[in-house]
Length: 294
Ligand code: G1P
Image (cartoon, rainbow, N blue to C red; front, side, top):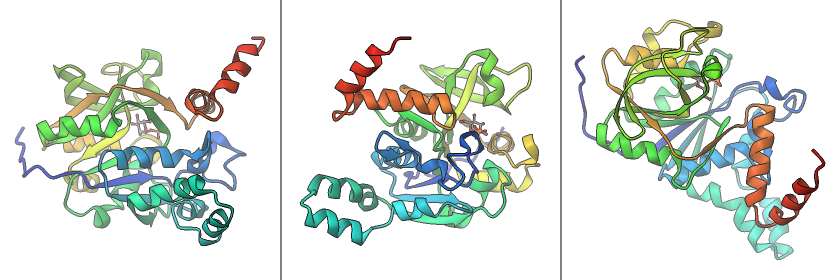
């Protein structure tokens, strides 16, 4: 393999694909984007954007679609609400609703047709331009001491190449994920030798791709020559497989608890777990859970 390495560039931009229909949550998501479902008191997408901001990312690019305007409204400034809160002296709430919009800048682009995760990332080419960038999937909520994307950045800084997040999953669940084959090069780090999107049988390992990626701009050329894959959609995993022909790819087994908030059970687990840490409600929630006659 010939790998052309360029000068190491800081990751400043992150792409958040948010155009999906959220069918797993219907009817709740008929009129509300699934990204706006609340995890205790903040919409899911805000946790993932805060993770990016905590890792030093400055520009947020959200790929939206039909019926997703609530996301843009959420990260915009609401003058009416702010003046009401000011009037009522609710300083903390005022700070909370403003904070994230002040920390990062937002750009939006629309995916006009549901052509897949790879396609959603591919259409951000002009916004990302020629620099490495992060992709964070809002379904994957990761509770970690060090933001998962920051843990990956540490590896990126060493290898100056694409880094994807992985986690070991039971073999009977590998068909739900992209799965890597890799050579272990250090604690929790692998050099990827192959990747398969949602293998029906014979997964190459139990290392599943989780929704965090640091991608080199080479991925955009890879999209151009990657054929449609699972579900007739352009898959990010398949484009990574194309990229692997010309660039190295690494995987980072991050430390932290991951919740699949795109799934009902995962969403409820995340709500309970985050609720138990939330100072306002933790005591009463614990009492309630203990009192459940299960
Ligand atoms: C997507 C990716 C898959 C990855 C998963 C992580 O699948 O295509 O490779 O393992 O996210 O959450 P989705 O869950 O969107 O079907």
